[in-house]
Length: 180
Image 1: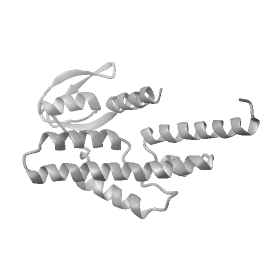
Image 2: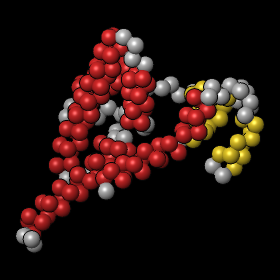
Image 3: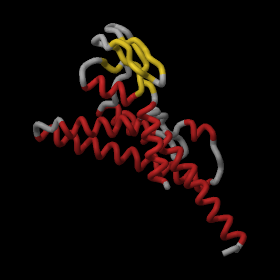
Image 4: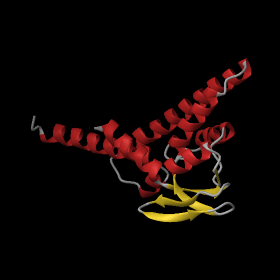
């Protein structure tokens, strides 16, 4: 069930619009059940999946900067500097972007230095995830809904937090009621 819900979040991420600059005339293109004219020099909001395909064909370039290795390091440092009950506000598409960054980094391995860079990136991503999961679990144990905390979560983390909260509350209530 959890895997299915995570997959739904991933699909929704691919459907979300991203801003692109059109580099070559494309003419009329079907977008969200409508047709839009995509001409060179124009900016448009296209679904992520479509912008990715057009990017690979050099028809568009993204206006939002892609997540980089330095961004992950900054997020990790920021997270380490916060208290156990606070989270850094990540980009909404952080985990999607991390997967893309890791894929790009792994596919461009050309030297020992680039391999070490990928290992360091993977380590930083894992450290950041562990820090955030620890904070999510600790907050879920409190059993309270904290809007400010939830506002700092990505969709993937919000799913984890709410499921943990529900599971913990259900477990505690079953122990108290004694209805096994």
